[in-house]
Amino acid sequence: MTGILAIDTATDACSVAVYLDGEYREQYEPVPRRHSQRLFAMLRCLLPDGRLREHGIDAIAYSEGPGSFTGLRIGASAVQGLAYASGLPAIGISTLALQAQTALRTGATRAHESVLSLIDARINEVYFAPCHYEDGLAVLLQPPRVSAPEALQPLAGYGCLHAIGSGCALLEVVSAEMRSQLGAVSPAVSPSARDLVPLALARLHRGALQTAQQAQPVYVRDEISWKKLSEQGRAP
Image (cartoon, rainbow, N blue to C red):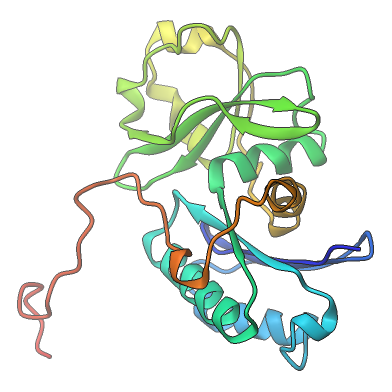
């Protein structure tokens, strides 16, 4: 049997799941800005000695973004370290596809629906991508993008879309044209690490794997950069 360790730190929640012999063990907590405090505690709880190969883990799946800049860096750094130490491959999955997979598992969406997966990007913007389901797996129909909600335009060729995720809270200001394309709206959907597993298994079987060094966050904004303390007006 295949074993997967799955990690998601892309949103306000932190979650870790272990899939072994067809069974799941998982931990999920809403912990805004405390991912670094909770992630390794969760890992120790699910895999106490950290010996991934001895536990039957074959790959480490993670939510690669878009999402919280800090959360993504924490998650990717942890995956890099674990993959390097254990000699295991990594599998990066879009957070927007992960969120659509969570929506399907929890019954928020149905397999025949097209979905608009949305995550609040802060500063009055949303990350978004349309998805659909193929054989029960969420598939992005376009690459993730970021936009002010009032600038969202109807997506040609996709018909009615079921909007999901934290970005739905910003849809009050979308244009009438965009609103007309949206059917149901499910703002409570939040990605969970356990839903990385079916997506990761499909990648594993295709051989679509990353080395430890290739495990990196995927950012949608180009202008993200760190500022030195002196540029922030703070003393070192």
